[in-house]
Length: 273
Image (cartoon, rainbow, N blue to C red; front, side):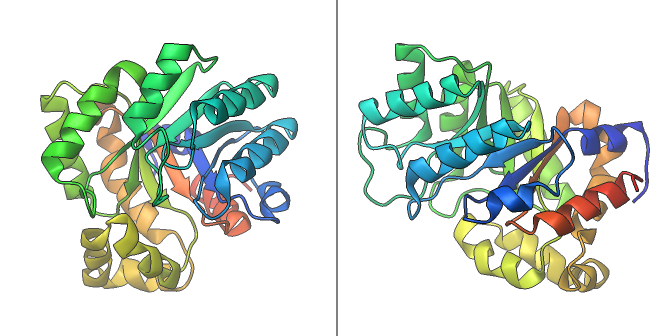
């Protein structure tokens, strides 16, 4: 990967996202000491699995960022319990998402959960929210923009959905900047994950344009098929030199629990043996 100071800074400011499976804690040992680790929330596993893994990772010295799923948190009492557990573990940074649960309770979207946190008080120094450079599969763009603007008083930064198309990302960033959205941005990128995994999740999370971009770019596609993170290298090489002007602060790396391979990619990209 081409290096300059801004590219190096993006690699320094990586958040590694993991899924709370039975082996996730063991796999996380491959990550750099003290790394920032984001823990997803899913309707299948529930918020309990996210909180449990987050606490375990914090005990191992990681800077932990659990996802708070609005649709996966059924009641205000459950939210209070989650916040208390995280606070007791010294976790002061969360990432608030709408979530995929089909039967939401008190919090139908991320904004409603953010407002509940603000109303009751919370111990979090930083709160991240989601950005969508390629849009959302079920939410119109104008509604996404309105929701993002409404979340600004509660948010510290944006982390984007996974995207490979540098031009699409830059266009989206300039669009939100024109709407006075000045939050720093962490780019959502894949770790060392094979293309089969990316294709499986692509339609669900709304990255069809990026998958088409990969298919057109044979060199990048070939290396992704081989399990490399060349798509991310390519993206960072293109956007890294202008990252400061765009307000890109770091990378949010979707490992899909291919943690060891992703950590190896990070060390290679960062010229760390």
